Amino acid sequence: MKTIVRRSVGIVTFLGLLTGTFSVAQREHLQRFGDLLVVAPRRKTLAQLAALELDGVDPSNLADFFRISPWEADDLRIALFVFLLNYLKSRGIPLTQAVFLTIDDSLAIQDNGTRKLDTVDWQFDHNGHRQVRARNHVVLGIHWGDYHFPLRWRLYLRASTVRRINQKRTSQKKLRSFSKLELAQQRLAQVVAHLPADVLVYVLFDSWYTSAKLVQGIRRHGWHVIAAVKSNRSLAGQKLTTWHHALKGRRYDRVRVRLARGGERTY
Image (cartoon, rainbow, N blue to C red; front, side, top):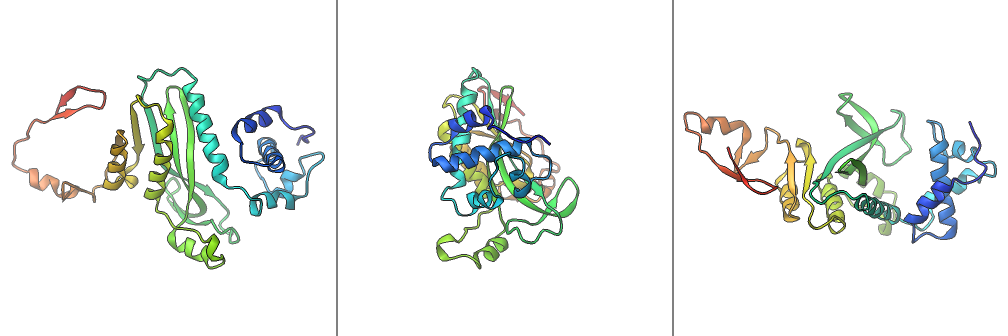
């Protein structure tokens, strides 16, 4: 494994474009972490990261940057997503090209013996069809032209997990519980002001997220929805599983639907 002798110019330049609220010492730690994570092998403990630098710091300094250093994750996240959107706008993508925003949740799987990390909980892995110990993030991605980036993300914690963590915290530092749907709505609301006003926006998600509240919130922004619907959902006050009973023996009516890009189509 190569040892870092000098900080990467690319890392320093990139983080210099993002940060405006960090002190000099915090910026140095942030640059150090960016550099270390790029060159580190698969296993990334703080001790192993610190050992990769020729003139490295003690691992406790790296830990303090996350535990007690007075900065908020959104200081970096908001700067990052504004930077990404400005980057996309500078690519010359025509405004006739629709923007696709995707909502999904992503698991960061841990060892099943993990007990000391508060945010790790039992989660269902849909790919492996099993329960795993993991962190769960709600992620908002953007697809525009030939580009795709994860734009905003937020850690999801069950209400029971939040209560357990809050038992160890003072009243000033207690966490608030949010559902995945609430986290998705918050992520979408944060990007509204930064998207070009004239561009057509579609929001895509799977059937788990399909709810009247989320769809109505998206439509209020003037955006469009592409999603699946679970069979146990209700549409116009009637469960989807019973619709075929109501339609049995009836003639189908032709309906004209207004399309997102203008014009109409008959179904």
